Amino acid sequence: MDRHRPVDFFRFFHQHLGGKVYITVLFGVLMGILDGLGLLLFLPLLKNLSAGEHSADWIPGWSITTVLLLLLLVFVIKAVIRYTGEIIKVRYQHGFIRDLRIKGIEGFRRMSYLQFVKSDAGRLQNSMGSEINRTNQAFQLFFTTVQWGILAIIAVSIAMVVHPLFTITVLLGGGLLQWMFNRFYRSTKHLSKTLTTQNHKYHRLLIQLINHFTYLKANARVAVYGNQMAQSVKEVEDNQLKLGNIHALISALREPLVLLISIGALLYHHHVRGDEWSLLLGVFVILYRGVQSIVETQSHYNAFLGLSGSLINVDAFLSEIPSAEDNADGQVRANAKGDFAFQQLSYKIGAVKVFSKFEEVVPGQKLTLIKGESGRGKSTLLHLISGLVRPSKGELMIGEDNYANLNIQALQKHIGYITQEPAVFADTLYNNVTFWDEDNEQNRLRFRRALEQAALIHFLDQLPDGADTAIGHQGYNLSGGQRQRLAIARELYRKADVLLFDEPTAALDKANAETIAGTIAHLKKNITIVVATHQPEVFLPHADKIINLS
Image (cartoon, rainbow, N blue to C red; front, side, top):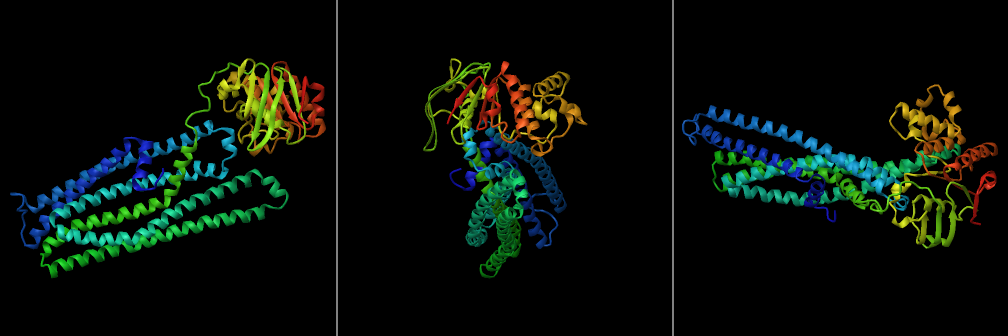
């Protein structure tokens, strides 16, 4: 969305809804036409009643009662159309928001590792959560604005036909009023964009509070960090208050000012130009309806502008996500078995070279130990094997296949990557291991077999609810060794051909480290094992190959 005009916002909705936006507008047009017809029926009533007559002489043989009944019928039909239009709009709105969320989720699947680590975590969370909720509200306000705008155009058009000069007089006053309020609209749009940025910051701080709570609590720094969050909350709420004040001021001033302009026009045309009250009042009824619709159009549009920053952000967020997976058309391997060969491979992060013309082979179905001090590139080698990053130069091969020609996501389905702090989800043990696979007898057997291989079966048998035992946030009720075994069991359950371990024993004591090392070594009969560590002692007896990066 290069510009932020009403037509640009309409294009955004059209991009996601297609022809449905025109159906929504069509219902607004139908309601406007019926509203205008109802207003036209007031004219002969006012004219005849002011003359003391009891028949509508503009329609021969029709009494005022007949006209009133016709008026009632028009507004009943309008109510039916309005109800139908609102139901359809609600369905479109729910579909629109659902599609936005799904596109965001799909975007995470297509997002590269480097794109993710360079992103603002607060913006990612805010865009997928609060910002889409605010976009939902913006949808409602935008199309309500369009609907009021259509009513205004039709009512003003009718008034123009009946009494052009009086209508023009009122519209000139309305134009002056619009010029006065433009400053408020600009401020609203600016504050909305600032509010979106401030919400990104708040969500970033919130994510860090959750991720680092143990550190903050143990070091009595929750209060200090809380002060940073409190300041962020104050900034957000101050902006919300400013937006609310502007909206309240516009809402309070607009109607009396519009009435002042209309009454001034009435008095001028009656006392100065000598127009009849009956005609003026008839046009005034129509025009006031139109002006009231203009007031509602402006009011809803200003409220929409208060949310436009979220809409702009969501549009930018979705446009930044790749439209397709990297090398999605590449060769799909049936497995990840075979040797991994680094051939004249170079890799750099920014201007920093991590590897230059690196040559090495990681043998398949063996245990390879990568050792070296921190910062030597141990984790980077695991990132390269797992496909998280690509070589800057040179080649990485698996068997006879070059990584550059492969569908990496298909390959990653056969590779298990277990970090120093394994991913543990706040769910049951069964769902953590099976990754929400269907709960049936066959999968329960696979689940137990994976736990047996990971030496976690005795832990399972001791749990009061067995596989259905809830695992707390980040596995707080599990030991470090149990978290590692759970992560191993998860990859064994999906029958990974390769297991990559990044500092698997760094947080464990010597006894637990040796036990975990033995469990990992036992798996190398059928699986390629790669362990990166700067504490290699416990793995040396089991290693088939050692890559020393020191």
